[in-house]
Length: 111
Length: 115
Image (cartoon, rainbow over all chains, first blue to last red; front, side):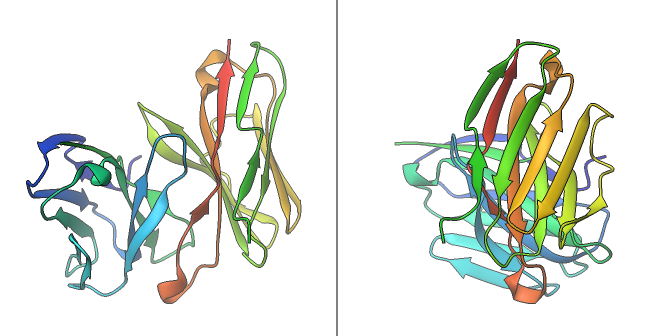
C-alpha cells in the first residue's frame, strides 16, 4: 500500500521553465519532508514542514504543506539543469515514527 | 561525522546464496531504517529499529529476509536464500525523530544483483 502518491511520475522541461510536483495522501502526517536523490546516492533532505498551511522557500524552490496535513506541493521557478534528479516526499504519521516515502518524481531539466 | 555507512556498495550473487548487507548509523541516532528501492515499487520501508529494538517489520517481503541490530552502531539485513527478484538498491537510514529535527539520513546504498 502506497500511502503517498506523487504526480507527475516523470517530468522533462526546458531550462527556465516553472514546474510543480504534487504529493497526496488520505492519511494525516505530523510532518512532511521533501528529498532529492541523485544517481548512485541516497536521498538528501531539502525541507521539513510541520504546520498545516505552512509555506517554506529555499531559493527557487517553494514548498507548501496542505491545511489538513495530508498533502504537499513543491514548486520550482526557473528550473536549471542542476535541479535534475528524483524528488521524493516523505511523511511521518501521527502514530508511529517511521518515514513513508512517496512514489517519486523524476525531473530532467534540459539546457 | 562520516554519515551513514553501508557495505558493500555493490553485490552480485547467484540465486540461492546468502547475502548480508551492513549498516553503521550516525552516532547518537536512535532510529534505524532499512529500505529497498526499485523502479517499479519506489522506496519501500522494510523494517525499522528504535534503540536497537525492531519496531515494525511488516514491510519485510517474506521469511527469507531478516534484520538485526546487535548494538547502536551496527545493523545487518540478511537474505537467505536470495532470488533474482530481490535485485534492488537497499538503503539504510538513521534518524532522531521529533519536531523540526525529523530527518532521515541515508547511506549510499547497496546495489544487489542476484543472477
